[in-house]
Length: 502
Image (spheres, rainbow, N blue to C red):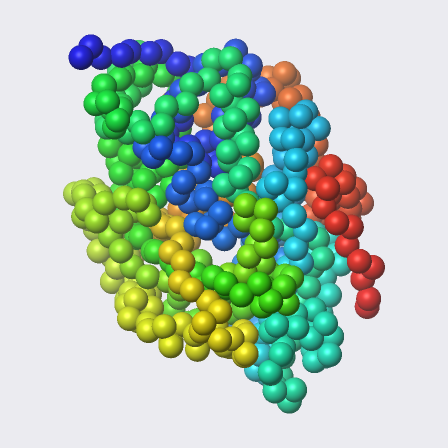
């Protein structure tokens, strides 16, 4: 069978939200670009971008307590929350641009208004939440946040959580009406539908990238195999983006770029408890996040989560963390051992040694019984009945391990872009906040990998059209923040927030 050889300008590996976002952006910036997309599975958005595999919060730092750590002096650091909230506003602007252009047809298919709340109990946690509220409301991005320790008020906000709870218990919650629920699976499929309809774009499903070679001419030779027919292909591209979720690390290592040496990955799996009782589902309308257990990874922050999946309201609780050697939900148990190389062995061993509490936490999570999981749920839903909930396997996340001159290696929580010095290849590693900040990540990647074009007036003007606040800090401009949020809310058909009661 003869080998097929193609010469696209760009190769995107992985058909998830990252590749979809980058592909649409690049075609907006340069419509004549030719792009080939290779996906190992038979459908797009089947791994981390899928609704059941992704937290879908629209991570905007409204309710995620791990984004606002308490410093040694007792003050609350909101700097990370400010950045993430601003990045999410950029995502909203990009989606609003696509809706206005008719590229995304019905915003309610992928984004809906759902209040974001943080909920805690116990004197120490209540004091933390009050300090967090005071700190966050100094930023324009968190204006409108409400805080209450009043049982009746909390009962109005989240009746399912307060039902059956001791009124004498010390509790508190914050609430942001402008929170959203985002179905990144649906959004990704809409973006790829648009890309496939454009000239110069080819999407290949059931195609696995096997190897890379970078020649002196600056062109990447990407070897691909059709998993259905066995047909071998080779794509010669000027730029390659690896956006394969948990599968990005092995591909980055296979590329051989010096910048990728020393990186490793620590896989963490997850599970949800999914409510099956419509009467219970109807009693809750919010995303309620609590505090993570000591030693747990940030992605394991417990939350009771209202979702809209396939047009139907759903209710999830979790995630319950676990451990597997797979890097993808539909991956291989050999993913982790095969990712260990001489150049990342020391960082991985060092990170493993310094994260023994995390390892113990994951082992305990794996050993949990149904009764243990129900007990954790009842901390948030005191009246929960086991018959109303069933276990659902969530997506796979691979946390980044990187070299550290002092400690040998460190385990990072978050997302990281690794790119070749010449900008010809880039890979996205890590997890949360991930999909919610895909737009900002891709704008940064474009500046890093296409520096000359990105600095031209034409590209600068187009980026400003796509993201009107590009180059500005809405976290420092209350009026711009309010105007931007109002505009995107109107275009995306989100509900207007109720008047804030102070």
